[in-house]
Amino acid sequence: MDFYKEAEKIKAEIAENRRFFHRNAEVGLEMPLAQEFVMKKLTEYGLSPQKCGHGVTALIGSGSPVLLLRADMDALPMEEMSGEEFACTNGHAHACGHDLHAAMLLGAAKLLKENENLLKGTVKLMFQPAEENFEGSRDMIVNGVLEDPHVDAALAFHVAPGKMLPGLFMYNAGGVMMNSVDGFRIDIKGKGGHGAYPNLTVDPLNIAAQIYIALEALIAREADPEKVCVLTIGQLHGGKAANIIPDSAFMEGTLRTNDKAQKEKLSARIAEIAEKTAKLYDGTAQVTKLSDVPPLICDRELTEKAVGYMNELGGLKPIPDMKANASEDFAVIASAVPSAFMYLSAGFEDERGDASAHNPKVRFNEDVLPIGTASLCHCAVRWLEEN
Image (cartoon, rainbow, N blue to C red; front, side, top):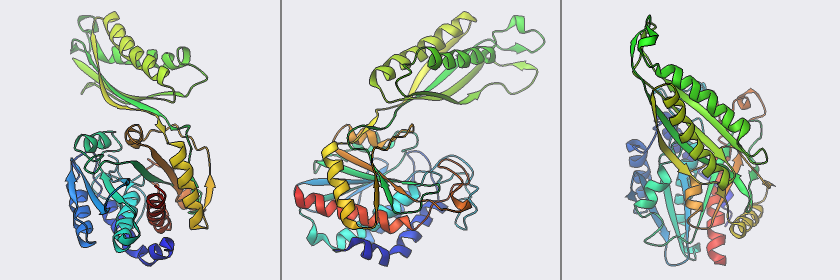
């Protein structure tokens, strides 16, 4: 079966599905439009979809083994500035390509159902919310996505914008492909008052500033320079007026690393620094963990097999040993079952490829859609044949 040829035939439909997700971007766990749309489409394709937590799952084929195909479908809380005719206008933006992931998996669902006789086992579909805030995988795992039937292996793809035209696939067979992420929030309590009398207050903004500087020094002086350790404070809020010292402030950030020991050490030090710095200035600080995702390490044997299947499709160029400082919620799946994760180039050579992921102006080349759909289908059929 030439799945790329079949995917090209339905490219317009895959693109139409992608544009629905794009125009109706949703963030976080609650994605009612996407969930309803996926349920509707899978039903049209002859499947019997089920809600799984805040996501959707469905089965194609029967018996063992069972391969999970996963796509995330959430967007980012940012205004879109791409200039696409199908741009979202609700204050959210598909600036990471999850709309393409969901559309490619819908395309694969259609083709695999039409060719169900080729499956020597079961394909389990996973349409996941909340990848961006790292809640979606655990939400669906808790609700049984890896059981009934038990999943033996998992596969997922991610698109990559930029200057690389469709036709490349990037992978890492066994090393750390993407970093862990510990998301955290620091709530700072002080004592508010008049801006003219700071001596009568405990200024939480001053405490926040001191904590921020101390956390910068944490990476500069305590992180192992031979490991990847990146700490970012992405939010810092406090106060409502120029002449009022507020009672409280808060900041949110992420710690990313490729080393378990560094992850544990630096996470503990973030809490210690925040609490002791606040105490030094007569305030308090409480650290709350928002996310805890391990590094993404793909199964070597499964990844090498998937690379072989991708090469069978023809016309695709492999790029091994990919590494990225970013983090990926699929790591939670990969820590539970043998998994493979690959990037597909989806860029442009002209100015449309100037923006990167998570940029409000980013654009993705829809020529990647049949490539992704065909890759999911072919890898699924071949892996089930061999296992």
